[in-house]
Image (cartoon, rainbow, N blue to C red; front, side):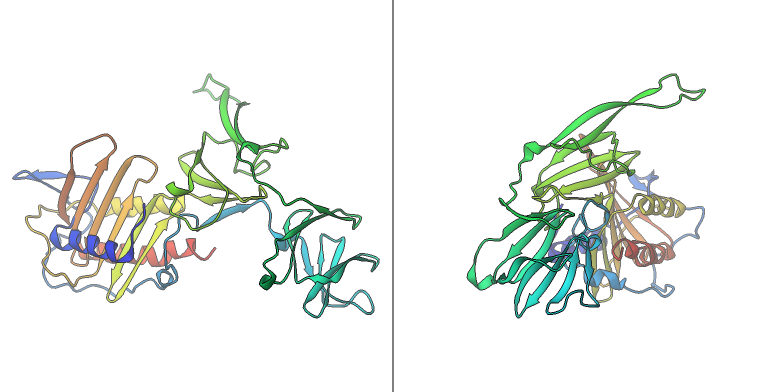
Length: 377
């Protein structure tokens, strides 16, 4: 789901100041669905006087919300194979890096070449201005960008033998989804001791995520780049699910992959002159948010929304991946609009309610203290 900042502001403001509502429980009075509270004092929509709260600064760094913002596993990280040189190993050579404990990168002016561990020149420093590791055992060699020459690729092994290879070509058919059976010891309540799992398998037979918790999925499916709100240039995208948790598995053209937390919801927030948007990308954080909202309880009937269009507000979309989306827009005076969109249901479920004004503060602080950690990992 994509929103421009201007559109989100107009839409959210219109919802807050034209209607406003929130909660999971509803009642009715004169045909109006409402919410109620036993845990917080009755809210009165008068002058807004709240405890101190502030706009979450981490939102300023999110220029465009990206669903692929919370990586949990990387199959290849170049830094794990590269060591910066602090003491020169060979006289007459200016080495800058050691790659894979088997070759050195040395510099002559702007050019870079390669040495083996005995100091023998493997590639002269007269052609390439950049040498980088693109996957285990494979180097990408680049010339001056002004020359507009294509990159060249070289493989190397632990003996320091370097060989030119053809540019790697990505083929979707080299990635497949396969199912298998697993056995578990049955409990007293269970008679079934076999269960089905799905995995992504590469053409060399390797299972994606094997040896980690990020495998043996309940469900895996290929998804299109267009279906994701991301600017990251991967070559293939998969969505995986296990125990109610969602993940995206993304491949580059060399079949390196990164696993990201999936999205459970979305937040839009205005505090003073500050406005920002971000995804909710951690299952535990999302569960915490649900419990927080449930703790607000229910309040008395609301006949009319707030009229103050200058109030701060927070809008939370929840239920991503379930087909049961709930959008709650809460203004700083406690007025709340809930829009409940159930997949396949043609009816519009919108209702107004009012929460204690400190519920708004609790949500802003939750965004500031909890969601911010998702974007600094």
